Amino acid sequence: MTEAATRRTPGTPCWTSLMVHDLAATQDFYHAVFGWEFTPGPQQLGAYVRAVRDGRPVAGLGELPPDRHLPVAWMTYLASDDADETAEMIRACGGTVAVGPLDADEAGRMLLAADPEGAVFGVWQEVHQPETPATGAPGTPVWHELMTRSATGVAKFYQMVFGYRPEPADPADSGSRTLLLDDRPVCAIQSTGGTLPRDRGPYWTTHFAVADVAEAVRRVTASGGRVVRPPSRDDAGRSATVTDPEGAAFTVVLAAGGH
Image (cartoon, rainbow, N blue to C red):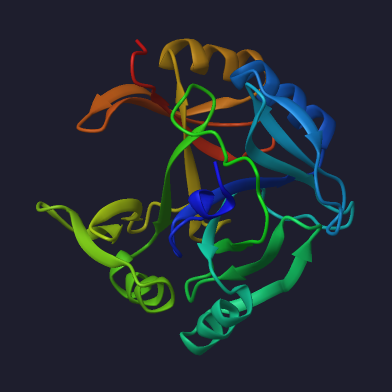
């Protein structure tokens, strides 16, 4: 596969990463839940590893400095053809850029930003990536959602920066939005109203495919995580929402052919 064939349309979720306080323990947890192995990654922001499934990259895990007592959450990276230009657009549309843009080894250029409501996300400009992240199989990311108090205003920010076309996620729910690129749904914004915990603001969350939702939940709890929403079935299929031992929430969803 050529480099051009792996390049993502700007705005497409292209990577997910997690910054934690105990990297070794977090690796043990996700190895137990998803079967991930780990290889060294870029070290510009400290200790960082790439999670690998069947020899292909899946996600990134990094370690926070000891004095950074921040909430732990999975962070979605959105593709860009020009990280510096995207940084300027983020600022112009009311967001903030906290880190970068900076080079991540020879693989690309990245930045960390927050939307006007405070949800943190990353931007990734691919320079060279011979392997695309694995998706669709058990243990890989399959969907990304922004959990925020109201989708209406912040959807305009993402539309202006990344060119999304927002559509109501459900005709009966005028608050939530599915974000489309080239008429293809790529991610969503979920309005939570007043249900977000007081000690945290809006955040992006990642959905990971699993072969068996109930078994994945059992592995989560056996490894020190907890259940936020037990296994259930909706229009999107069978899923459950859980957290890892440091409190990072994620959703496990049934992979094609699973049970």
